[in-house]
Image (cartoon, rainbow, N blue to C red; front, side, top):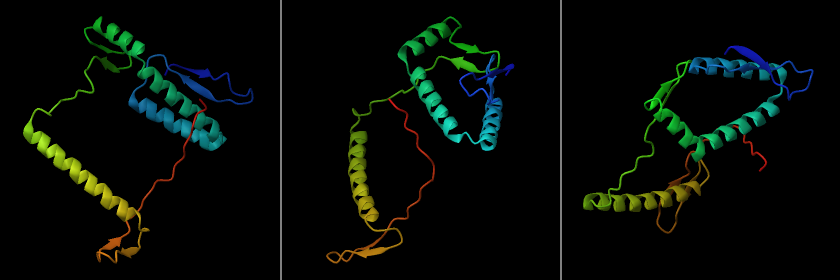
Length: 166
């Protein structure tokens, strides 16, 4: 982080500055920047604008990183550097094979086990559906079979959701 850059799309009375990233950042520097940014939001109270901006940046990064033109260009450039490059800030960029998949279906033992696992998975889902049908902490009795069903414990995490306009 060499200099600070004023973000020009904010109101003129806002003194928020963003880091100018010239040579990349380490994980520690990213963590510090994130921590400082959250502290700034806590002081300034512009949480909705920040949440929207983060969602937009995340969508932007995801879109660029999966763009085949970008990937191909990056791979071609890496080939010129013997398949890997270390940036001035220490980030290592290298060629790799990801998403490797194997086809085991020619093996009869594997096919037998796979079929058993699929059947067990279906049975498990039926049981889970039955357990979800009873309120947590409650007990239900199936009078036809005599089966006692304890409602499944339910947990969740309170968070938020942002949906960007298309």
